[in-house]
Amino acid sequence: MSDSTPGAPPRWLAYNELAWTDELLSDPADCEAAVANIVRLLRATARPAPRTLLHLGSGAGGYDRLLKRQFAVTGVDVSPGMLALARAANPDVEYLEADMRTLRLGREFDAVIIPDSVDYMVTRDDLDAALQTAALHLRPGGAVLVVAKPAETFRDNNFAYIGEREGVHLTVLENNRVDPARPGCYEATLVYLVRCEGELSVHTDRHVLGLFPRRAWDEAFDAAGLDMLAVPLEGAYDQYLLGEGCYPQTIFVGGKRG
Image (cartoon, rainbow, N blue to C red):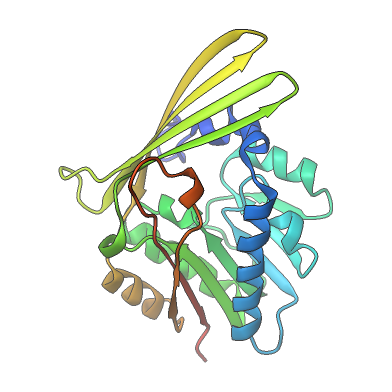
């Protein structure tokens, strides 16, 4: 669902009017495993050990609840609904509403991460801009980490998520599909079934996301002045998959040259 203002970022239902559902669907164990991996890779890459972290596409703040134990975190997101949740969950974290393609804070961090939200870079120009932002905010010797889905390993899949709290039962079905008519992208279509006090409401949300080959990732990192190592990531969403499927991801981690 897009904002009607020309040039404005899309206003997705999932991250605004339905942002509250994140609390029902989030699994603390999933966050802990993902954050532990992020921390391990950042510490293995940055020299000296990182103390400050810029989180681009920080969402509802679930990761930051854990990351702030290790770093001084600054979170950035484009969706007001997610930022409201993040600020309520982590009042001790600095949160900013901004676009990762154009953000310019005029300061450097020991580490910059873009987990998952990099998918919303739909074009190569978007991807280059996001990585340039990461590089501009990273001190020499710092570490950058991006969680991505290279086109070569991407698969169409269906997912189901379920949550319940205080009389509200939520089921979310997600369909990921590559559209042959729109190369370089995939669609994530979400259907929300919300049951509250016996009443059912149904909501749909469609997201168009970028899908880049490994060569494009290599080129974008290089153009931003960033070294890069690819680390396979598998199993992160397996428990939510419907039917036969797999959901391989890749973590790109590296440092700033010079």
